[in-house]
Length: 449
Ligand SMILES: Nc1ncnc2c1ncn2[C@@H]1O[C@H](COP(=O)(O)OP(=O)(O)O)[C@@H](O)[C@H]1O
Ligand SMILES: N[C@@H](CC(=O)OP(=O)(O)O)C(=O)O
Image 1 (tube, helix red, strand yellow):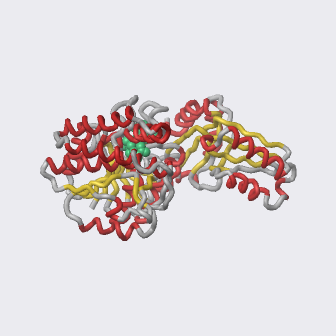
Image 2: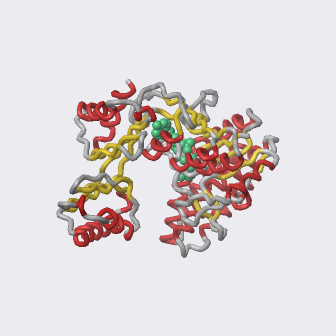
Image 3: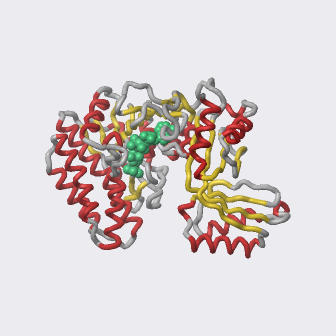
């Protein structure tokens, strides 16, 4: 039995959904089908999830968000019409969304989760109806009834261990099961979503629960590339990659597969196959426990922007027991999560996501660090990019760091921070965000050309 996830681009229009139908019915093993909300049809299109977010935010502010609401309903209406599915389903989708929008808005994050989740939920119902209209036994499955229970963290939920036992029973159901991605339910019955891109996580949980032979993840590229295809033309494809390498690269900025989707399949030993809905015969990329390590120390280069660095200097910091704990406690008091903490004898840097900070919070954090920790110097730097090179082969290879540093030097990019050591399979470099593309291209030249 296979679990198959189709991302937003694969279900963005009637034409794409017809391809999904062909792919699913071509292999009787493709039984549990996870679908996202309609995504982008072309580069400058808007994903239904983003339209829903706009709509929900406007309802919260003004009690009205007619334009975004109509844009969402129009997307489904166009798809239903072109698929030849009964138009009644569109009326039901509109009524369902209206009901959510006019529901309880007292808890904004809960309300927003219900609005966002409707994107996947309604698309799953529509796709199930299309499969049925083609004479295939297909059933929409509601995540609550199936037992997909999550922690009660709106917009950032995690699966509860007891969900797996319930979800295992999906094995025994007949027909093709169309399961909406991205959300589940808390133990008290509230809708909660994963973080953005979380339909990958739903697929991974289901594949693990039912012990799938493989988790196929269909998207709009032939394979996971060694580098973001928006930075390098025709980058080399990765044919095989380990879970650990893929998790690091996803975390580092490879948007193609969610980093939290690796853990459930890794624990259950289910391999993942990333494939292209527009070219399903291409073998794609396989994510496995162990790969044949034959292609050099680096398997991929990832990058992401939007980081800040809080730099703290204090003479004899190395002798002050508890300094690091007290510094991180200040961040915890402001509910700030951090990504890395490289340190020296008298200095420590805390790298964190910039979007967590507003000006007032930033000022308060810096003031507390200065006054409570008696630091000699505290400052913050914004607009940084983190660039990561990843590969299991690095463990044995000598000179990977010097090759990377030489590539940075050749491209004239100044390295602001290096983090290597904690992870055996990656090295991370902090640079100015403006240098991101240049640095990535230089590393690609060095390791892949
Ligand atoms: N290293 C990479 N390899 C492949 N695709 C990548 C990589 N880095 C970023 N991407 C982007 O990820 C996109 C696919 O992910 P996503 O947009 O989430 O698709 P889906 O709609 O299937 O969920 C690709 O179109 C590509 O632009
Ligand atoms: N639709 C949700 C969940 C998701 O996984 O979407 P996609 O498959 O388009 O990345 C989002 O945009 O976050």
